[in-house]
Structures are given as C-alpha cells and as structure tokens.
Length: 403
Image 1 (cartoon, helix red, strand yellow):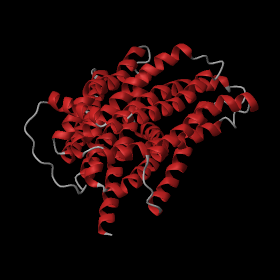
Image 2: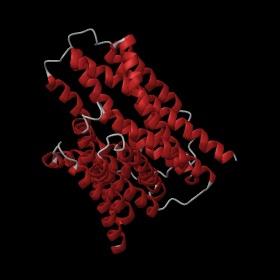
Image 3: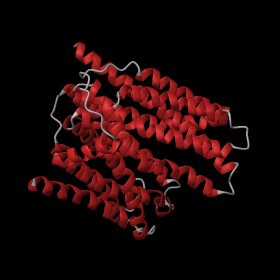
C-alpha cells in the first residue's frame, strides 16, 4: 500500500510539474504571437524566425540533451531547467518596453527551447526512477487524460490572460509557472537506487554508446522505426486538416476547429477508460496491443474519405477524428510504457532524445512530401496516410519475424 501511495504521489507531482509549465508556455506563446501579428504585422518573416527557432534548437540539441540526462542527476536537471526558464521570463519582462522587444522575444524563445530540450528527456527518464513498473501504464493514462484536458483549456487561458492583463503579465505568469514547476519537481521521491559512477566519457562517446545500445536491442530499434514511419504519415494527416475547412465549407463554417475538438474528446474518453482499466485489471502491456491500436488509428484516418464518398455528411465526418484521437492516444500510452519497461535506466534519456529527434525530422519531411501531393479538392492524402499507418504495422511485424 505504501508503495502504491509513493507511486501515486510521484505521478501527481510529475503531472502537476509538467502541466503547469505547459499552461505557462501556452500563455507566453500566445502573447508573443499576438505581438508579432500586431506590432510587426508588416514583417511576417519575423514570425517564421520565431516559430522555426524551436525546431532548429530541437534538431541541434536533442541528442546532446539525452546523453546529458543519462549522465547527470535527472531530478536536478528538472529543477535547474525550470528555475532558469523562470529567470529567463523575468529577464525578458525587463525588455518589453524597450526598442529591443523583438530581439528579447526571439532570444527568450531560443533560451526556453534549449532548456526545454534538456528538460524533456530528463522528465521522461525520471518516470522510470520514481514510478514502479506496475504503475507506469496507469501514470501514462492519467497524464494523457490531464494533458488533453489542458490542451483544450490552455489556449483559452492564454487568450484570457492576454486580453485582461497584456504582455507583461503573460511573461510574469509564465515565470511563475516555471518556478512553481521547479518547486514541485523538488518534491519527487526517487525510488531506484543511485546509479553507479562510471568512468568519465565525452558527450559524443555517450551518444555513440546509446546508439550502439539501440542497435543491439532490436526491439527498441524497431520501435524507433515504427515511430519514424507513423510520424511521417501523421504529418500528411496534420497538413490536410486545415484544408478541410474549404472542403466542408458549404456544410460547416469551421470544420477544422470542430475536428480538433473531436480529436481531443476522443483522446480524453479513451485515456479515461484506459486509466480505469489499468487500475482495475493489471493487464500486461504488449506490442500486439500497441500495434492493434495503431491499425485502428490508420483505419480511422482512412474511414474519413471512405464514409465521405458514401454519406457526404460533414457532421458524420467528425466521427473518424474522434476515433483517431482515441486510438492514437492508446497507441502512445502503450508505446511509451513499453519504452519505459524495455530500456535500461542508464540509457532511457538517450532513447527518448532519439525518439524526439526522429519526430522533429520526419514531420517536416512528411509535410514537404505530402505538400506536393495535396489537393484541397479531395481527401486522397487522408486515404494515403491511413493506409500508410497500417502498412507501417505490417513492416514492423515483418521485421519482428525476421528478428
């Protein structure tokens, strides 16, 4: 019973720490973008620099951050990165009434992106240190549920803070959320014994060692391959979604917004069900279950053009998005639970950094490829993406048979 209480407390602290900083970031990002589209409306290049800076930082720093997370005390990394993020927002606050407003926003965004790059693998690696294996799936289910709820609420909070208080309070709000997140991270109880001190290695040696570990453990390697393929096809799905406003314009004024809400509702319902089931029945997490959810996810995407060809009903077309959001959530819960259970503690930071790097690299590649194929007048890309996700599962099974 005591063990379960520690797991629950740690899960709550990790969730609270992560979601608090996410809400702060949403407020911060919304305020910055509102300034860019109002004060700098005639210079759209500034917006593109602001948005692309985060992606570039992720590509450059992700692998180094994973190696760092496996070398240094992860709890300290969480506390220090959150604390420095809070200080960055406070320093940025001092430059808001100066001629250096845009420069302060850009530098602040870059610094926060760097700190976030180091924070993310440490946060995920901390789960293995602070939550026992039996509770990991429940934690991911609860966290996904909370994350989806706040993904809907966060933009509303951003709009509210911006409209009522403006840019300065938005920066102070984000600083406060980071400092609070650092305080909560300090309360997390580490349950694994301390790591043995190894001989000093350079970051490049650690990255090489991590890659060798992944190549040696084929299951992990194949998980990374399926992650890459899924991200590639989902980029086409995400690219197509805004254009659905035009496709369904005669029947619905904002189909894209309704589809996003349907996705979130599906994710919330499915993660809530999974949370309940994982508490009541300790079922083993399995790759077959993970792959089943991915096949259902692909079928849900492919269902949109198929049912549209038959029924031609915009409201009925929201159902595939709810199913897709739900099944993708279930896949993610299974995927990250398997990663947590399969990877040794000393390598988990590097494995997560590779997962994040693959996502960053393959999403833009997919967007470019599907950008050449996309025709707003039809739903062909949706059909291709749905079938592509299903074929990813087939390839994964063939690789596992070959293993």
